[in-house]
Length: 90
Ligand SMILES: [Zn+2]
Image (cartoon, rainbow, N blue to C red; front, side, top):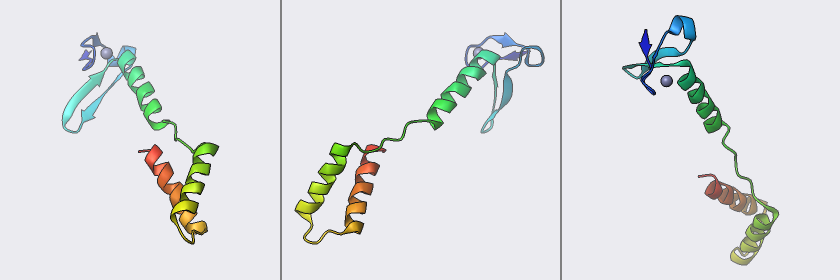
C-alpha cells in the first residue's frame, strides 16, 4: 500500500494506478485522483496563454516612437514592440 502525499488516502499503485517517485530527495506518492489533478495543473501551466498586443497598443507604441525618437527606424520600432510584449508577458 502507498499513502498519497496530497490527500493522505491509502492506495494500491499496482491495482489502482497513481505514481510514486522523488521530489528531489523526498520520496512521494500520489493516488490516481491526485496524480490526474497534478497532470491537469501541469498542462495548464505549460499552456499559459501568451499575451499579444492589440491594434490599439501597437498604434500607441507607434505614436510613442514617433514622439520620442528623432529618427526612429524599423529597428527602434521593432525594439519598442518587443519591450511592450515583454512588459505584458512578465
Ligand atoms: Zn490523493
